[in-house]
Amino acid sequence: MAASKEIEKRRTFGIISHPDAGKTTLTEKLLLFGGAIQTAGAVKSNKIKKTATSDFMEIEKQRGISVATSVMAFEYKDKQINILDTPGHKDFAEDTYRTLTAVDSVILVIDNANGVESQTEKLMEVCRMRNTPVIVFINKMDRFGKDPMDLLDEIESKLNINVRPLAWPIGDGDEFKGVYNIYKHELSLFQANKTKISEELVKFDDLSDPQLDEIIGEESAQELRDEVELVDGVYDDFNVEDYLAGKVAPVFFGSAVNNFGVRELLDAFIEISPSPKGRATDDGFVEPNDNKFSGFVFKIHANLDPNHRDRIAFLRIVSGKFERNTFYKHVRKGKKLKFPNPTSFMARDKSVVDEAFPGDVVGLYDTGNFKIGDTLTEGKDMNYVGIPSFSPELFQELRNDDPMKSKQLDKGIRQLMDEGVAQLFIQEPGSRKIVGTVGQLQFDVIAYRLKHEYGAKCSFTPLNFHKACWVTSDDPQQLEQFKKAKTGNIAKDKDDNLVFMAETPFLLEMAERDYPEITFHKTSEFKVSESN
Ligand code: G4P
View (cartoon, rainbow, N blue to C red):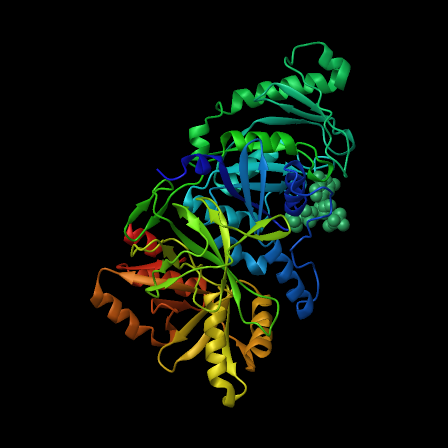
C-alpha cells in the first residue's frame, strides 16, 4: 500500500460561489489560518473584474495571476489542504467545471442577501453529477440578509440537495451577535475584525443556561433557543455518510471578511471531508492506495510570455507516488515523458517538488504534449474518464482573415482547444469551423491569442444556435436517417463524436420526440457512463 499516511492527511477541495459572494475572501482567510500567508490582502482575486471585455492586457494579467493561485496548499492540524481555485467569471465557467473533476469535495459560498444565484445553480449541477460532498458557508452575516430558514429552503429547492445547519446565526447586519455551533454546543460571539484572526471565542455548552440571556440579551437568547429547537425538529440529525455520498450538505454561517465563522468551518471541514478518492478509468476504478502512479490533466494554462509557447499542465494525482525526473507514460500519445521541474504551489509561491501523492496537483511544463483529460501512468494503458465538456451556449463561425496564415490558424486553434479555451465543431459538409463557448469573452481571448501567439488573423460571425448536443444511438439505421434529415445541423467535435446543433429549444425537443432511439447528451460525460 503506497503511502497511506500521506493519502489520509490530504484534503483536496474547491471553493465555488457566484461572483462577489466572497470566495476570494474566504480563500484568503483559510490561508491565514493555515499560516500560508501572514497578512490579509495577499491573495489577489483572479476574477476578471467588471472591466471592458476588450481590455486584453487586463485579461492577460488576470490569467497570469490565476496561474499563481491555481492551487494553494497549506497545513492545518496535521492535514495537508489543497485548495483548487476556480475562476469566478462566468465566461470561464467551463474551467471551473473541469476543476471540479479534480477535487474531492467543495465548499459553496452563498451571499446571505442574494441567496442562490444563477452561477451557483450551474456549479452545483456539476457537483450533483459527481455526488461531490458539499459544505455550505452562508457569508456576509454582518450585513442584513434573507431569513436563514428561507435561505435554507431556497438552497434545498434550487440546488436539489438536502441541508443540515450545524450552526445557527443570532441576528444579522447591525444586529448580528454571533453563531451558535449546534454540533459542538459552542457559542461564538461576533467581533468585526478584518485584519487578523480573532481568537476570542466565547464557549457555551447549554442553551438553557440563564447566562445566555446575560450575554446576548433575553430576546435574542429566547429566539435562539426557539430557532435551534425548530432546526433540530425540522432537520434530521447530521449523518457524515450522507454528506460523503453527496446527499446532505452541512451549513455554516459567518462573515469571511471579519474572520468570523471561518475557524468553525475549517475545523468541521478537516473532521468530515473526504481524503483523496479514486477515479474511474476505461479499464476499471483506480483507488488512491494502488501503488502504481497515475493521474490526469484537468487544466492547461498558457504561460504569460508570448515568446515562449510553453504551457503548464495541471495534473491531479490519483494513485501511487509521483516522482521528479522519472519516466511516465503519456497514454494517448503512447510515449514516455519525464519532468525535471514539476511544480507545486504554496499560496503565491511556486516550488519544484521531488514527490507528490494522491490528492496533490502538480504543474508540468509542457511544450504541446498535453490535452485536457490526458492520462499519465507508470506504464499501464488506461485513461481516466469523466472530464466533461458541456454544451456551449454561444456559437460563432471562425473565419480566416489571412489566407497566407491558414496553417498557423489551424495549429493555433487546435492548441487553444486542447487547453480547453472553447470547443470546436466542424460542420458537415463544407468543413465550416464553429467555435462554441460559454461566454463572449472567450471569442476575444481566442482572436487575441491567435494573433499574438500564432500570427494568425481571424474574425467571428455569430451563428444562431441554441445548443450543441452529443448524439448516440443503439439503432444505427435511425441515426443514419437522422443525419440525412438534419444535414445542416450535424457536426463533429474534436474527437470525431457526432453532434447535433439545434437552433432553438423547440427544435431540440422536436428532434428528441421524432427520434426516440437517439439520445441527446447535454454534456460529453456520456462517455463515462458508456465505459463504466
Ligand atoms: P468573490 O471572490 O466570490 O467574487 O468575492 P470576493 O471575496 O472578492 O468578495 C466580494 C466582495 O464582498 C468584496 O468587497 C469583499 O470584501 C466583500 N465581502 C466578503 N466577505 C464579506 C463579509 O463577510 N461581509 C461583508 N460585508 N463583505 C464581504 P469589494 O468591495 O468588492 O472588494 P474589496 O475592495 O472589499 O476587496
